[in-house]
Length: 183
Image 1 (tube, rainbow, N blue to C red):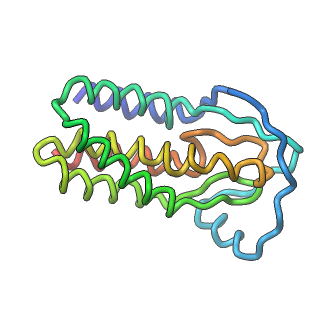
Image 2 (image 1 turned 45 degrees about the horizontal axis):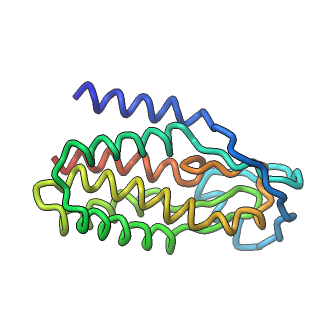
């Protein structure tokens, strides 16, 4: 239980920290009449266009989940092919559900990753479903909604794009909670 609380608080406090990696040239975002609805859903407002985008790694939404996933992989006898399949399925669904939001970054509905990860892990993982749900859910979001969407970032005009932050952190965080509920 203490490890779960440590993970919870480290993720929450770490979500406020972004480690800069690089800066890329950004294009001015196009105005899209469908975006205000998505912005309201994500509770985000656009930031002013600066001409560049800082690419960063969010501590609570990227580094902590990667370290904890590595810990789970080393402690549980998960079959490599099951883990890769679960991550691939979750990645594909997260990619399909995520959307570039001009002026904001990448957004994704918060319940897609936790529900997908739970279903996939229960189908593939058997008694190891909880750790598999955490691993495939967090890595699926980071790969599918963040890394595979990097090609869209320059066209968004957002001043910062944080891997594991903003529009994807909620899904990553809830994935951990749902994984614990599977026990």
